[in-house]
Length: 477
Ligand code: NDP
Image (cartoon, rainbow, N blue to C red):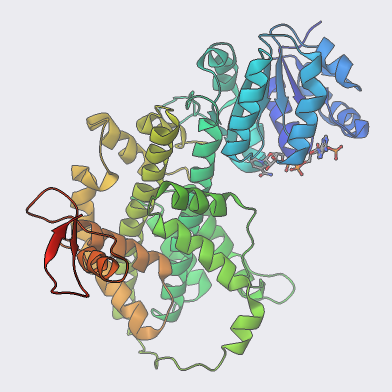
């Protein structure tokens, strides 16, 4: 027998992806550097479907039907290159290597180019949804050559998550690194979503004076409305959880230093390179890094802050409603920024990414799955070349309805001394974008003054310079 697909790298992600393929009726070849993991998989889950366990790279490649489809699910970075180097010489033109790890899209572009020269199709494939997603249906973001999707796509559509309307959460994102780029921005948006939820929690705790259990109930209520999403749902679960050892709310016994693995940071680094303002995502990454600076935080204890204003029960409830508005409006801004980055990447690298399709495949399987994504899908359906999510009529109307409360929440946070970098960065982005005039004109004047960098005028074409050190007359540059 031959396998329709093979998976090498059988840690939690690869193992679950392999089982998912097998459960969907495909014969799956298995390989792992450490052979015992391959055996364990067959021993524990062999009855779930048809597996062919291979001990060597040669056996693994021989077990695959042609053209071969070989999924790599190993640690991103050097291990991925090592595995590619091991397998590429054993493959033939037309075969396919699919990297499902969290690779940097620039690495994917490099690998795709090198393998293309050998006639091998290289598919950089973003996979979201963690280990549960990999097993029961992830959101999948494959890049690489379009023709590879013709043979790989139907298999991915089978194993992927399905949105509420039944649509598979996978689409061909675009050539070379497009899939990993979109996965990267997905993770950046995930950071921003989590930060905004964290700020909402802190405001309900410090300004409204709610307990974690009460806040869990607030989040449960929000989860029945327009904020309905996986992250809001699990937030309620985490907040309601009580530590067995101490009887305290779980959230109070966890060290408040957030960790990160890098995709959020990449999203911001690449945004800087592309010149895309993703302030909400950047604030989320910085907030995690600030939380980790234990020494700096310890040294700052005792710095002056405002006196808290206690709220009545009715005031607290009204404030909680306002926080929902602020959270929703800020979320619209995060997605606006993330989709802008995808558009900019697509333009820069000629990927022709369909933003509506991206929002569509994030509706199921992945961490940021949410009812909200249906609305983004609708926005791009209404207008495929939407310049920004904020220019969609529905979103603009919703923000118009939320903005008073959004401002009040940022004011209250400022007054009470609660840091809300996500909410306030989102609001600043919104206000700057809608401003008729920005102080950038003054910036240009300063630049011309100290560096003769020239400026453009509102009333005439061309570049100009003022003779600041002389008679201050204007010359054409
Ligand atoms: P790990 O990232 O922990 O990687 C472990 C696997 O990599 C093992 O199979 C290991 O083999 C193999 N490996 C490491 N170095 C080498 C090498 N030099 N040569 C050959 N094989 C090597 O596993 P995960 O399952 O957590 O993740 C796999 C990929 O999926 C990663 O790129 C990760 O970023 C990505 N990902 C993970 C998610 C998650 O929730 N965990 C979600 C989405 C993507 P051995 O057993 O021999 O050590």
